Length: 354
Ligand SMILES: Nc1ncnc2c1ncn2[C@@H]1O[C@H](COP(=O)(O)OP(=O)(O)OP(=O)(O)O)[C@@H](O)[C@H]1O
Ligand code: SF4
Ligand SMILES: [Mg+2]
Image (tube, rainbow, N blue to C red; front, side, top):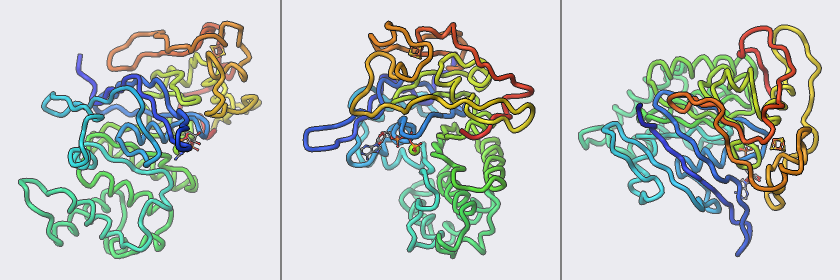
């Protein structure tokens, strides 16, 4: 069996909130990411999706810290690198060359006083262009132009523009082009279509399909939009209160979710086609990081909760074992009672936004 390109074991991340205080935003994450695979991280606002995405590439802000666990990256030659042991210079080379991130909020991700061409120049010149050679001005322009054309932007119009001169969709595309500038093997995209109109969202999704087919990168994308997850993901991981509480193939998650929270997320969105079922919201609110419920963190909101759910933390249990981390696993003591009561009329591609 092939080895994963990125293996995450028991990863926990905390934010310092005072001189001696901190809150744990992500805890006990186990995840294997296989080459060419596309993984969606879904869940309500504040559940830790961005924190995990940033942690995977060691891009956490100053107040964020990986407090335990391991992150192992496998290079093309089969050797492995311990991402947590990497020094600044090694990390700089790892980022962009091996893995890159498209940050949440395309509107603010560019420096507003720098033209788009100079964003490309800064990124490319921070790395050599092969054989130890430096990027010349002409080589930067040629590479940036080629990348912009790949995401269907006109280089003549875009390269000399400042970010505010571009629409939201153009900025998002330019950001994706910038992220793939050094041909990374892993691309993490944080909410790549949020705040864009529906037609622009469609076109970005189409673009991502095309880019994956062309470059073959492994993709982690973070989203609230279950429709996007259904469309782009081979595999989905649902997060709740900083933990992965269910993971499976897109089909497992959208047809036979086994965690009441995943089922609740699906029941809370309107299918695009077919019958219009009554939408159900999930009662209550996600817990505060400072007052995490004991046992299963979902128990105060769960219709199936029993006393046992309030005891120990509930680990992920393997339901079906499949190769290449396409297993269906769930962290629920009563998963056998969970049924998705919505009738699907067609493929899982019909589910819409949370
Ligand atoms: N810099 C920070 N300092 C302290 N707490 C933080 C910081 N950044 C995030 N958090 C907290 O960590 C938790 C997870 O936040 P995160 O941004 O990862 O969630 P998210 O799932 O990406 O949410 P959203 O969908 O709104 O983007 C939240 O409770 C948030 O308040
Ligand atoms: S472990 Fe218990 S509280 Fe948690 S989701 Fe399952 S039934 Fe609900
Ligand atoms: Mg986020």
